[in-house]
Image 1 (cartoon, rainbow, N blue to C red):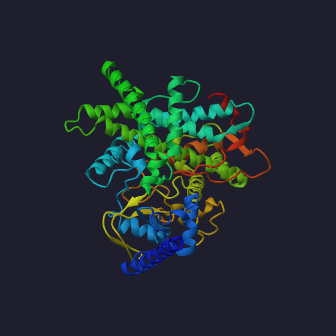
Image 2 (image 1 turned 45 degrees about the horizontal axis):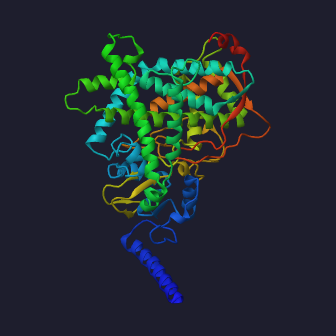
Image 3 (image 1 turned 120 degrees about the vertical axis):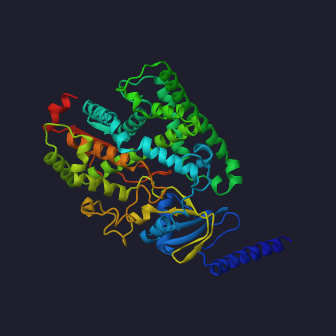
Length: 503
């Protein structure tokens, strides 16, 4: 009886594999990998970090693969030409997002700008973010916040007495302060923090959010996700996030009701008052508290970890390559001089620093596989048929570290970006995505990354704590953090002591 049962299982498995193989050929689907097991598909193959594992698959099987991850069909592309085909020729078809746990629970049931399906709601949210949040005028109005926080960061580093700096913490706190002051006018780290209890509450919410923003089995095997309680964990964090941002909105609503108008008040430029003013004057009811909360939480989540992580990877590469660090400092000294601190607008005058930032984002993109897309109808990619409802994963890390695309891709070489044309060569470098769903906050990110890195290079000399190279091992997560936080030696540059003492 047992032997008979084993025989039936083997027969079923063999027929399943053979049938799937011929169906893929007949339907002209992209190539897949063997074996694909019933129910779980290719999930048993997966290893972390996923961007490196998927890159290995592409090297072995080719730049286009169709995987079956549980109940989801996934198209994996890992070449510039295929990425271009998906995100330009088929951009409209792949403009949707898949319905996954993070979008359902943290994206307000897939109604936030990051997770909403392509349609009128998403277009309205995109227009709102472009006009009221990321416009050049708004970024300029809030530039004083970024200037204050970068100066505060420099002061904190300068006053550090032991000469060892935890740049992971420094950059993360910088970005949280920048984003929270832009959103609500409140500072959350540093000497003048307002409510200690609220700060600790906020810190825990951020930590839990980034921990959950990872690959969840419930996205592929819902029954397994239910057993593991993934939905419950997401819901607990959602309630904390929602309560926190609602508190800030209610606080501003009360203040606006009692305050007299003041055109020069920073609060008039920060985002909560701006959005509440739109809500008050909106006859159609689009600017609900839910819409405002989803926008602000998306901005907070996308604007902190990604930028701070990019800066940490950048300084890790620079202290491991001191000759490049010195070259960047020499450019700043030549262009800015020693009698003034650089400003955000100076970044455009520092082409080598911009090359450094491009090279950092090439080697260590903050979102190594971009955010996933989903096809709204059948289409063709690379000559293969891709069915409707297929999740698209563009492995930006694989493309940006491919030796067939980049010469010596493992080498930190900012000079490769001298004369780089983002339009002509855009699908070789796409840290912010491409097409309709491209990150709308790229201009803000590039401003604060360039300003922050340039400022600490201008003011301080940096070197490794010991003789060993900085560990460049990658951690796990939706973004790509360093496994080991960056700690480095730092001392003020002698030519900048006078200015530093005046901050």
